[in-house]
Amino acid sequence: MIRADGMEYIGSLDLELILEWILSQATNLWWLLGISTFAFIATLIAVPAFVIRIPSNYFSRSTRPTTELERQHPRMRALGVGAKNIVGLILILMGIVMLIIPGQGFLTITIGLMLTDFPGKYRLERWLASRKKIMTAMNMLRERAGKNPLDSVESVNVNITPS
View 1 (cartoon, rainbow, N blue to C red):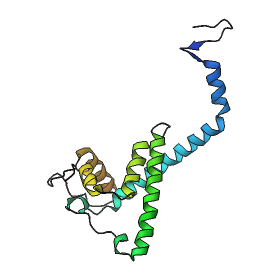
View 2 (view 1 turned 180 degrees about the vertical axis):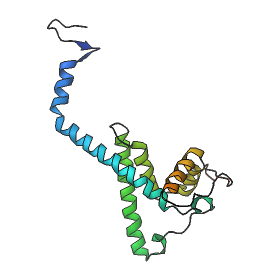
View 3 (view 1 turned 90 degrees about the vertical axis):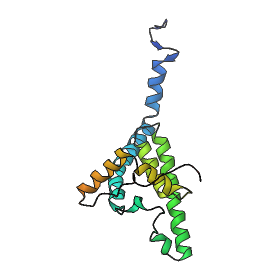
View 4 (view 1 turned 120 degrees about the vertical axis):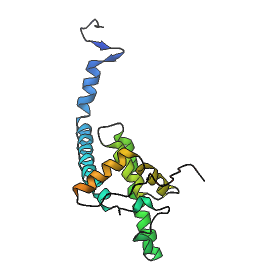
């Protein structure tokens, strides 16, 4: 639809006003682009690094193996767990934002979930690893790094419903 002054409408939005808003937000949009690009590159590096470090029998156990952090002094453990959970929550929030702006939203949320501690986390990890496409992708990354493939979870009964 064309207005009396010759400007075009898209529905009820004025193209001139939209363009004016975009130009007024140029600095913010450049920052968003930079942050999204950084997050994308960081996840391309971080995900393979995480997958390669997983022990090959990690998912085949019925209970989560003890980590190095759990063997530390209780105060150091509390400090480490607290810092890990804060970083995980920040990544989850950044991932939610990246669902709206360009970026690896789901991947960033997944890494954030991997870092946080919550009840049922190991059960959820095993359920995700039992998915054929996910296990295949993880094992391809491990093969490229010269690591043994992850043990199959399919032979293990993985139940994510509350007990």
